[in-house]
Amino acid sequence: MNPVYDKLLKCYESFRQKIDFKPEVAIVLGSGLGDYADDIRVEAELDYHEIEGFPVSTVPGHAGKFIFGYVGQVPVVCMKGRVHYYEGYPISDVVLPARLMKMMGAKILFLTNASGGINPSFHAGDFMLLTDHVSLWAPNPLIGANIDELGVRFPDMTHVYDLELRDLIKEAAAEQNIGLQEGVYAQLTGPSFESPAEIRLLHQLGVDAVGMSTVVEAIAANHMGMRICCISCVCNLAAGMTDNPLTHEEVQEAANAAAPLFRTLVTEESKSLGNVLGIKVTHLDSGKVLCEGPIAEVKEKSYTEVLEGNEAGETTAYYQIDAWLDTSVGNEYQAARLMADFEWYVEEEENPDISDEPVTSEEPVTSEEPITSEEPVTSEEPVTSEEPVTSEEPVT
Ligand code: HPA
Image: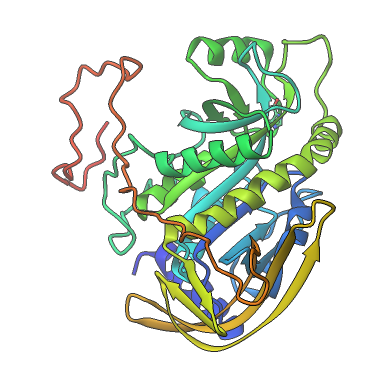
């Protein structure tokens, strides 16, 4: 068997022996975002050391564990700490965690990272939504015999960063009044920061922000058919754009300062992913919680009503629901826990009318984005979404 796949399967078996949780969304926390995990209703944690063969990060600030739990209604696995190529791991180890989270059940990969801003309109502390990437220096994680069980030999990379997820992030940012830039991220290997000449070169290439992670994970996840989104915290202006020399401490400090807003954005976005995944509570009436989507049947539930009045004489009712559900995803059944806060204005207190219209995810998922004139002109045959003819020879 392919040794990379073999190692992945062994890690999966080791994980499954310890954890019985099926995430829908995988979140990777970048520098300074480690505390984000505090926003999760934690069900279980697993130290990377406890997974046989799993690569463990050596970078300060990248403590390593998986956290399993819920953000809103969404079951997530969150990586607190990731490994970087510059630590000396083979690239297949760098992307092993992303692959493992897909095997755990995650359909969406929500990446975060820290970057240096190259776009002259960016400021330290900005957030940037990735629209595309450049990774011409870090090795491609798919080099080597293709793992057919995961994906095709020549995967298309035209729409790595999912349009629907990007729209949701933009909506979440607007609702929270958080400014959001958009742009192209380049992964360089590090660990040295770039030289000013490299930054000028990247600027010429159309890169807006630069960092030392993410793209290889996104390539591996896209290979496996995951839906991907990424927000970068622009911690500093890149080398040569100011007179200040760059230090890891400065980057870490800037990431820490941006962390509260970043956390809000990640939390709001993660919650709304429940809609994308089709998890929604549609109705609450006479003690019944009805759910649609991957959640099939409520097994047990309880809820407590909290009534609160405001100065205008309006009463707000909150229902805190705690329900055990059977979820059916494909043929797999799993118990999952749903907790949600419901809020609506009560007009007749005796019989609160639940007017929450169900959140619909009716919009078709369009991964097709019209090709704009920005698309690079290729002198090759246009790449179609069809699988290319696979000879085992790498295309040069
Ligand atoms: N370069 C590369 N990686 C980074 C930077 C940078 O300027 N800032 C944060 N991560």
